[in-house]
Image 1 (cartoon, rainbow, N blue to C red):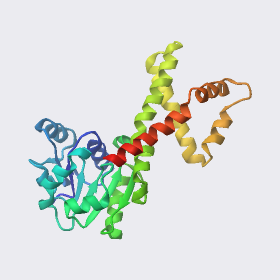
Image 2 (image 1 turned 90 degrees about the vertical axis):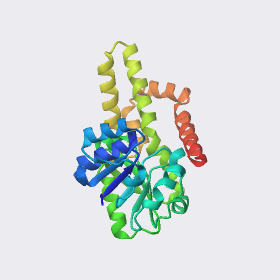
Image 3 (image 1 turned 135 degrees about the vertical axis):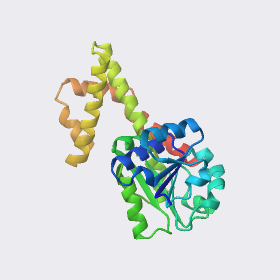
Image 4 (image 1 turned 90 degrees about the horizontal axis):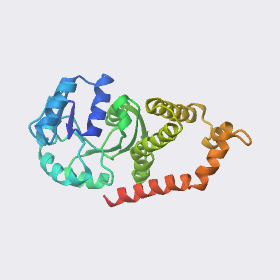
Length: 263
C-alpha cells in the first residue's frame, strides 16, 4: 500500500507533492497519483517519479488520501473512491466549503481532515490551515502535521474559522501577486526595467512579511516606522487611503469568505 495517494494533481496537488518529496517525507515510490488526463499523469511521473494510477479509485487505496480536485467535482469523485478506501485511511480534503460532517457522510471514512493550503507550498513556504475530525488520534494528527510541515507551516483551527482562513491564507497569494504587479507597473511607468521592478517589488513584500513574523511588532507600528514626517512614504499612504486600498482589501477577502460558504 502506498503511503500517500493524490486523487487529482492540479496546481495545488503538485505544489503539495513537490513539497513532500523535497522535504524527504517519503520516497517517490511511496506516492501514487491519479489525474483526469494521461498527459497530466505522464508529466507528473516525469517530473517527480511517483507512481501513477489508472483510476481515482486505485489512487485512493493509500494510507493517506489527498482529495486534490476542484470542489465542484468532490461529490462525483468521492462516489468513485469511497468503496476502495481503507478503514484506517486518513482522508484529507483541500476543498473550501466542504465540512467535516459532509465529508464523513459522503466518504464513510472515520478519519477526516480539512486542509486549506496555498500555492507557496511548492517552494516549502506554504501556510496551511488544519481542522481535524474527531476520528483522528494523536498519532494520526502528528502524521498529518508532518505532511503539512513538509511544505511550510500549519495552523490548527476550529472548523468554523475555515472560511476566514481560506481568504486570509489560502486565496491571498493571488491578491499579493496583484499588489506586486501593481507596484512593478508603477516602477516601469517611472522608467525601471520590468525585470528589476518585479524583483524589487517582490523582495520588498517578502522582507516586509518577515519583519511582521520575526519582530512580533504590530503591522501599524512597522508602517509608522517607515513614515518620516512630511516624507514620501506618508504621502503615498495618504493617496492609498484616499483611493480605498484598505477597504478594498477587506471587502475582497469578505467576498472570498461568502463564496466559500456557498460552495
